[in-house]
Image 1 (spheres, rainbow over the protein chains, first blue to last red):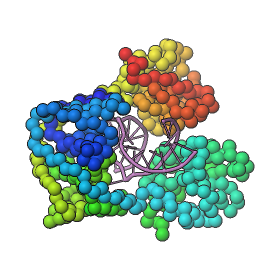
Image 2 (cartoon, rainbow over the protein chains, first blue to last red; image 1 turned 180 degrees about the vertical axis):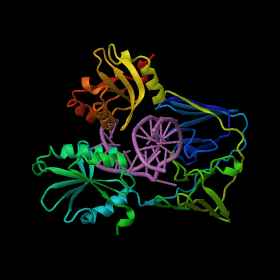
Image 3 (cartoon, rainbow over the protein chains, first blue to last red; image 1 turned 90 degrees about the vertical axis):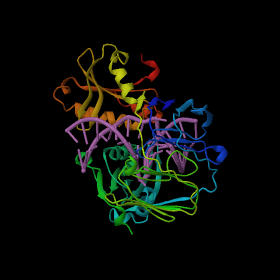
Image 4 (cartoon, each protein chain N blue to C red; image 1 turned 135 degrees about the vertical axis):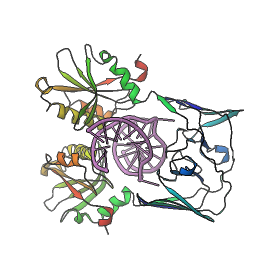
Amino acid sequence: MARYQGRIDAELGLGDLIIIVKRVEDGGDGSVVVHGPNLVTPRNWMPAGTVFHEEPGYLRFEHEDREELLEVWVEEEYHRHPQPVGLTGTLVKLGAEQEFSDRIAQQTWILEDGLELVEREYRTPAGPVDLLCVDPKGQAVAVEVKRRLVDTSALWQLKRYLAHLNQDPLWAPKGVRGLLVGPHLRKPCRLHLQDEAHIKFIRLGFEDLS
Amino acid sequence: MARYQGRIDAELGLGDLIIIVKRVEDGGDGSVVVHGPNLVTPRNWMPAGTVFHEEPGYLRFEHEDREELLEVWVEEEYHRHPQPVGLTGTLVKLGAEQEFSDRIAQQTWILEDGLELVEREYRTPAGPVDLLCVDPKGQAVAVEVKRRLVDTSALWQLKRYLAHLNQDPLWAPKGVRGLLVGPHLRKPCRLHLQDEAHIKFIRLGFEDLS
DNA sequence: CTGCAAAGAGGCGGC
DNA sequence: GCCGCCTTTTTGCAG
């Protein structure tokens, strides 16, 4: 049985739990996760920097700075296994959006004939444009890359960028258009795109890149 | 040491791990989480429906439908504790967006004098409007509630709804305007709002509601 | 610190 | 199944 108070109030009824306490004294960061019998996401958790206090049948996890508190009442403890941390393994990820975007940046012609990269992560007040390119006519092309799914929010994200780029004296004169790039276009977004003369979708998956 | 292949490729180097296997045979849903010595989020995981296979020093978690595979090579096993699930506790959350929205729905006058609720979760093709209201003049008011932070994406979300409502013969004649409600307005959104004559922000936190 | 967006996002509810 | 959206999102990064 547990209670969390902080960003919300939450009560967790009696049931089996697995609690991982990543204690600072043991080499952890002070975070805590409380798992139930299913789901990938924990039932309760506490962020890094949490302090652990214990009394018989009662566990208290407190994060003073954030004013968060997690209490667990233990009716029966099946098992406990303290274990100081020896080694933290390094995690390497390949094929996330960063790499997808990298690869496209190196072969922008795959998007459109003669398209050339100007800058990656070009900063606008509304956020960074994945790829800023120019076409053979010298018109700026803002490219928003999604590794999985291009939906309406991606379209609006790109429209925000375009709105800002069209204020930029460097690009505004010739106008700025946009490209949405990803392996799949959601239908509502496709419909919306019909009304967007200056934005096109280009279907491209990881497997299409060399 | 672990390797994940599926939505991406990931390799996790040698290090201490805690693995929770929520086996179906034990009452779980077949999901798996692999935790390192820090962070709330697991280093690796597998979704519900994963099948577990084991050989000495080697754990294999496979999800055939999704074509995902997680392999773990065990150099030294500190401990293992099998435990069938007895009871799954019920989790009750208070103070999430649902309740925030509920409370506002019961006192829409707190947003504007004379504002009356027409419908909650009013469906448009672009998604559900949190609160659809009418003002004393009979004009429709679409309200988008955010429990934490009102940012640009919330603004565009509301604009999508307004675009659809302004096509609706029931509301279009008198025009439809919008309200963004939340405890905090991000600056880029505030700047953007200056150009939106028909959308206003109302600062309102959980603590302002009775 | 704020702002912004990705994540192997997960999970939920609606249609 | 697709779609939209909330999450105690968490995490990372840049200005």
